[in-house]
Length: 97
Length: 151
Image (tube, rainbow over all chains, first blue to last red; front, side, top):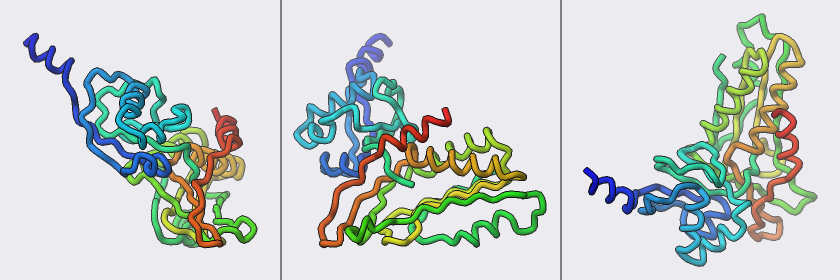
C-alpha cells in the first residue's frame, strides 16, 4: 500500500494540453498529450515545466502574465491547483465579440 | 428560461432570431439586440479570421448567460457567435435579451457583450488588403474595464 502511494507521488500522469491563437503558433502544435510529473501542483508550475521543454514553449510563455489557462474548460488563474484536470488549455487574452 | 447559445460558421438573421423568441407570446415587452460587425479598418482589412476553442466556447457562453438570467428578469436570451473567415460588413456576434420592460433587457444585453468579449474563448486575426496575414488582434484594457463594471 505504502509503495503504491510512493509510486504515485513520484510518478507522472497523462494530460491533454491544447493551445490556441499565437500560443499555438509559438508552441508549434494545436494539442498534445504529455505525461506530466504528478507533483506539479499549479498552473504556474506546469507553465514552468513546459518552458523547459524547448524554444517554442519558451517563446509562447515568454510573458507568463499574459497567457491565460483553462482547466477542463473552466478559466483558471496561475495559482489554481491542477487537481485532476484532464484537459489543460493555454491561450492569449480573448478577442471575440 | 433556458438561454439559447449557438456557435456556428454560417451567418444568422436578426429578424429570424427575434421571431423565434417572441412569436406566439404576448408577455414580452422589450427585445434588445446587439449585432457585432466586421470592420475593414479604413480599407486595410479583407477579413477577420475567428478561431475558437470548440470544447469550451459554448459552455463558457452558457455560464455567462446563466449569470445574466440570475441577475435580470428575462423572458428570453440568445447569444450567437460565428467563427471562421468573416468579411468586412458581415455579422460576427448577436445577443438578444427579452424582458417585460426595457431596462432589464438593455442591461442584460450590455452585460452579455462585456462578458463575452473578456471570457468567451475566441481570437481574431487580421487578413490584410495587401495580401499578407496580419497579426492577432490584441485584447483591449477597456474591455476588461467594461466587464469590471458588473462585478
